[in-house]
Length: 457
Ligand code: F0G
Image 1: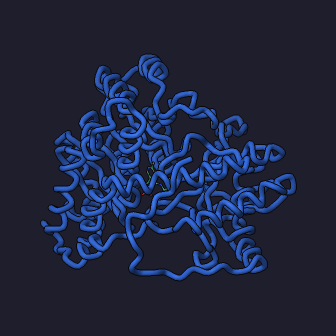
Image 2: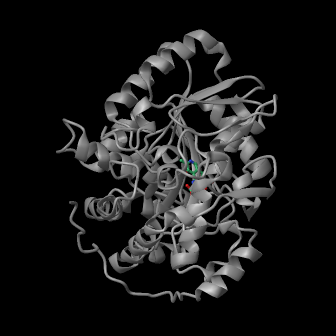
């Protein structure tokens, strides 16, 4: 059993939250079209919708905000961010962006032509959508163990190397725009990728002259998993491990809202000078001048400090133990979850939890809705609402796992909040046969989970 360590901080400022009663929650849910994204946050008690931009900043970050430089061009905030990125990532160039998907958009706009492929372990929803929006074809080549929730493989985010090599040969490397890997693998249970795998993936991409970009959102958590789980890394610092990871790639997309511990921000980093020039042009058109990229100077400073804080070992030990605590308590209760524990979130296997609800009736959505009704807890469906696709034939393909993700915001909730979540899920588990599926009444073409509407069956 992972020990829940005392938080390596104390709380200096509070934000009140309240739990509205069940009847009010039912009304709020109906008004939201049964989509938890449609709720007002004040109607949520414990908000585990995402770990993105929802973390608490440190006193050092707030202090950095006050010293930020809001100059349009050449702001000192930019150079402080530049130093942090140089220290951790080591790429030759970067452009700030307002968040991760803006970096994905710029990369996709520059490198993808219709019909080109982009392999990865698993693309997250915004990456996949940005690739498709440019006519590209995202391909997921994660190892088979990723689809076996109880399999204890320590690096279930790893790419299947044989599959990658076969794919590159079959498709012809000229038809691949660039290669990616997501650390940690958010769409596949937040599982980490090993250094050994990263090295092998980089070697394959290099052999076939395919540019290699890392989706680095949760780079610090992945680095700490390598320290804890991979032989040879126990004595290395998370910073040394992060540097080694990024030395393998040609660039990275980053959302500052995750492991930069900021509420907004991101960047696109690369070694290639020509690509950097093109990225600057695209940036000026859509985001802003290359020394601010659509952000305020204070956002750049918050990221500069947060990127380094995320590598602090006492923070990382607490962070991963918090997730492990919830995961292990749920396992004790008999609730099916993805094992071993992930970094930023707990993933409940809703397909197993609710075997009587088929994928096209959205079991993970049903569980997410019930958890809100039960305890005012908001999670997110990562299943057929998010990832099923209509083929040209009219047939739907469903993802292999129907997951309810409970993402834990950084430095925000205490053990008592997490115990409330565990208790609420346990209570639903005892009466799980009564839950029913949902049907879609409205859905847009891309990223439908954000705005779709549903009704209970
Ligand atoms: N890549 C991964 C792996 C992500 O998890 C996210 C965001 C992005 C890219 C895009 O970054 O939000 O700054 O534009 N994930 C959030 C989540 C939204 O809830 O998992 P963004």
